[in-house]
Image (cartoon, rainbow, N blue to C red; front, top):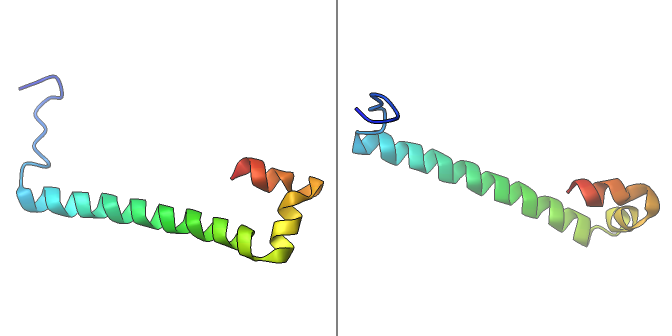
Length: 63
């Protein structure tokens, strides 16, 4: 028994492997969405000019 109590949820190698795979899939999806948004803002002229305009600065600062 340690400071975390009697936690044994990730003791199985199979459960741990599946958990780590899910974490990496979530990270990969987050990165793809982020890079997709960056590419959209960079390569689409209308969106690029909107983000650079004073009215579109909120997009720049929230991203």
